[in-house]
Each structure stands twice: as structure tokens, then as C-alpha cells.
Amino acid sequence: MPSTFEQSADVNQLPHHLSERVRVIHDAPLSTEGDFVLYWMHHAVRSHENPAFEKPLDLSFDAAFVHESPVRWAARNSSKPSRPAAECWMFHADAKWSLEHAGVDAEASVRSLINSFFKSIGQTPVDPIFYQTRYWRFAAAANPLNVGCLWDATLKIGLCGDWCQMSRFEGAALSGMAMAGRILNMKIGVPHKLQNLNA
Image (cartoon, rainbow, N blue to C red):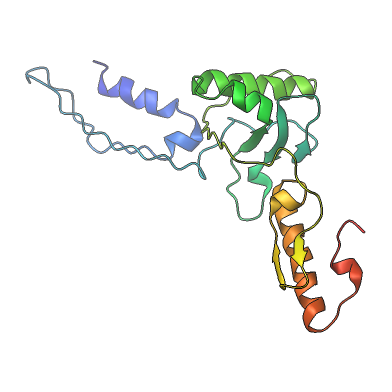
């Protein structure tokens, strides 16, 4: 078992985002006469505070759609408003890669996806110091309609969602705007361009 001095030295060698959370509560010399050591550990994962990378990645962009790569979307979460400054990225994998890696060891999947991302931008891979993964089976429509929204003028009812426009987050917002255009036109009359986003 390490001495108190060695324990303190280990704490000081931790990265800043970890060492600032560690407190030495009892620094008395270690006893060698006891029969056992009681160790009570409390652990909490706070993904919004944990950096994915130890230092900021030297990239000229904060978000990108990636082509010819298993990564379809990459975003520097720490660049968004009111987010901690610690370097944190989010990667969306495409459907093919996701299906092939469903149920695969999380660490292997993360390494494969990150390596693919760095390869696509021509840089040497950087290993994360923290990661979380989520397999979202129904994250995106394979064949979005790209019509803005569906609207029945006779019944005055409609459907909207990301599956109606691009099958992405912003597509859901655009589809909702298209639906709002239909409803406003029914009530007060609005220009047709607000009803059909593809016009």
C-alpha cells in the first residue's frame, strides 16, 4: 500500500479536471496494525462536466457533416452556448456502421469511430479520456420524404417531423415551420413560400 506522501503525489499528478475534485480529508500516517481497510467509494458520471479530450483539438471548425466516413456528423459540444469549456465532442455514426457495431464492445466501437473521423480530416487520432456511447436504433429515417410536412386541406389535419424533411434535427424544425405555415394560411392566409419549404 502506498504511503501518505505517495498518495498525495498521485493526486497532484492527476489532470486538472480530476485533481480539483479530490480532497485529502485525513492525512495521518497509515496504520500497519489493522486487519482490513474500509474503502467507501462514491462515483457519479457527469457527462456535461467531463471532457472527452485532455486538451482542445487543433481543428478549424466546431461542426461538420463528414462524407465518405462512418461519422456522418461531428460537433464540438463545448463550443455551444453555456457549455463548460472542457473539450467535448459528439459524433454521429451513419446507419451502416451503427448496424455493424450494434452490441460490439463500447471501447472498440469508440476507438473505431474516432479513428475514422481523424482519418477523414487527415489528422493523427487522439484518444479520448472520457466517453459515453448510445445506440439509437431509430435515430433517423432511411428515406425521408423531404416534403416539409403532410397536410390534408379537407380534414384540416397534418403530420410533421424530421422524417418529413432531411431526417435531421434541423429537419424537424423546418417541418414544424412548414406545418405552421399550413395552419396560418388556413386561418389568415400567408404566402405560399411559408407553406412549402421546397418551393
